[in-house]
Length: 294
Image 1 (cartoon, rainbow, N blue to C red):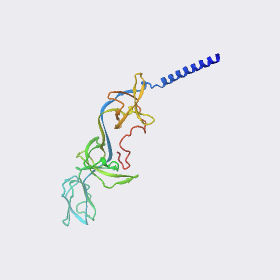
Image 2: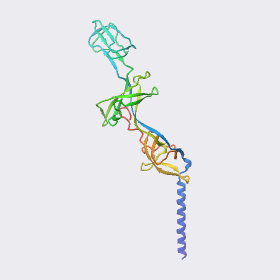
Image 3: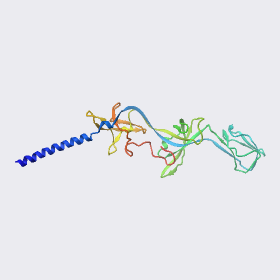
Image 4: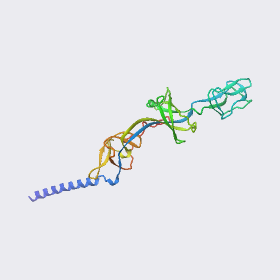
């Protein structure tokens, strides 16, 4: 009898001990609120963009060359002159006249009066600095984003400014790189006297846009082992509890919350970024091997 009583006593004690340890483990593993910051969800707008990079070029440039052997009698222009289409540029000793085919500024005069030149020699250049453009490479999956006439914003890094652009054309033939065809889109730039040929630029085209939606900073969103997003909320027992959420678009800074969080609701978070490789994709597509990105 004593043996049975001792056995029952040890069973009861073991059970109590296990329960005590379990509560202790739960208590110790309970997320400590002190390690978190809090932020309130708020209603806002999110816009995402496709971006493409390139360099500013002129739409109109004429390299004036000699068509045959000739001797120059008089050069009618000088570098820096602004001329109209059809302006007289050079006269030869035989009375031939060389005229401009475009309007623009005279640059790079490479010959002198009374000089005799062979056929095909460069004489001067005319550049139209008033009509500038930028050519960007676009992969075959994104050509629909740059349809003719579509408005864009063009950021000029060197000037720290944005100007308007309009898609003018898309090449009909592409260049294949790593199995993907890339096409050239031409964007006409609004007139701006501060622009210089050769400056690098980034073309931005709206990808997605949502307005008046619940938003949170991206680092307020976490992901479980199955890559499902969730947030942490403070419970009535002052512990951080998981709440699954449905996310929408993000601009790399804030993310749309479709469900799981209400406007003004307090969310717990840390300063750590979301784990790389999980959760959010930043941007519409990977780096463009032709020199741009989108």
